[in-house]
Amino acid sequence: MTPRLSASAPLDQINEWTARVRQRTALSFEVIPPRNDADASKISELLAVLQSYHPDYIAVTSSQRSGWLRGTAAFIEQISRTTSMRPLVHLACTAGNPGELREWVDVLVDSGVRGFLALRGDLPKGGMPVGYLQHADELIRLIRRREAAQAARFAAGNLAVGVACYPNGHAESANADEDIDVLLTKQRLGANFAITQLFFDPEDYARFYQRARLAGVRIPLIPGIMPMTSVARLERMAGLSGLDVPPKVRAALAAAKTPEEEQEIGMELTAELARGVLRAGAEGLHIYTHNNPAITQDLLSRIGVNR
Ligand code: FAD
Image (tube, rainbow, N blue to C red; front, side, top):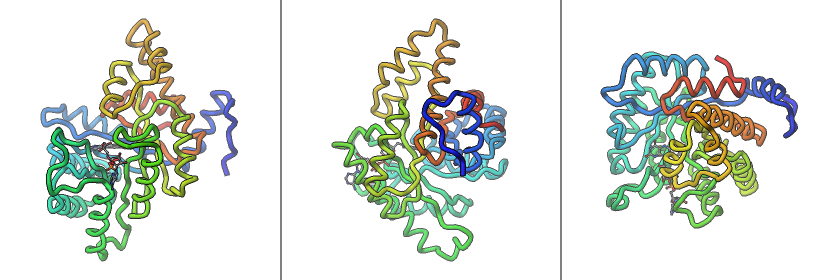
């Protein structure tokens, strides 16, 4: 068993410990389907770099920008054809009506996908279209029903279904209890794991983790770590997630005199965040790569995860 690490341990001890824990700690990457005009050599380089870390899985987002699942499925096909990484697909209720979602589940299963992240998706301006699933819990049911209907095909491994969770609360939730109740419901309906929305302070993760465990959530709560490369980017990403950048993070980045210095401060803050969540008991690290291999490598080397 890996010895526990004290909160005041020096950096080299943390790095050594992180390297040892890495043998058992899940590592996953999130990537975005490239645009049609994306540079193919850059995408190949991205996949080669990510593969060199032997991640447990690679999660591919889906959105209107990627033609919902069309772009996502095409990218998954490329990943499966050119690498040995296991793809996980993000499926959102906003991607289509239940009939279309069922078809997508089947198409993705046919293409070899065995992992789904079941999401509602960001609400369209006029709200969810009539007839669409309203929440991610209904999507878990839909996926599990498709799985049950084709049980014979899963003899070598069932589908893994993950969900989103929110250390700082979902913007639409009335309070933190609602977020935990929803997570418990998703666990009961068959979610196997959850990945967190971005957050900035390991304490936020640790508090959320403890609350969830006390309430009976048993599935892994995998922290989603977003490299903090600049305050402008951070504010944009936080805004999209309905979050505020904490004043202390903003102040640290604003103290930089050059963009390079700002990135250096931000990456060190991100590495400290990753170390902090591992100390808090996280079962894995999920890196939001934003398709940037250099930044991803930089972050991993700062926390002692080598290729
Ligand atoms: P839900 O679980 O439906 O929750 C949304 C709100 O409704 C919450 O306030 C919740 O408390 C409440 N709620 C939940 N269930 C019920 C219910 N049965 N009755 C009443 N209220 C309920 N979006 C994309 O479009 N594409 C992606 O690829 C994508 N990837 C993501 C990856 C991660 C790791 C995360 C954290 C988010 C991702 N998102 C993505 C964004 C996500 O779609 C949004 O955060 C969305 O606003 C909520 O999704 P959800 O699955 O948590 O929704």
